[in-house]
Length: 93
Image 1 (cartoon, rainbow, N blue to C red):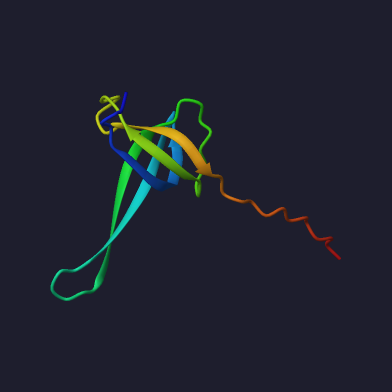
Image 2 (cartoon, rainbow, N blue to C red; image 1 turned 90 degrees about the vertical axis):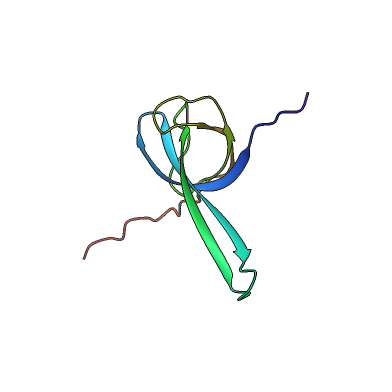
């Protein structure tokens, strides 16, 4: 059975709310007359049940029933986690 739900891929820009992340989705298209490439950014609030997402993660979100006033999406999967560099503290002389 094929689903008619919309899907988007974007990056998490905030996870400061309880079980909610803000996902920014970028879309580029060329202007029909001036041929300039335009970038459109839209922020979606998505439900993250297990609080697994962090800022910088690339996620796939799927449309769902209204969960709150602004939340109509849920995180389907985490495509790529943000890489955190392991930095050792230097000795203070």
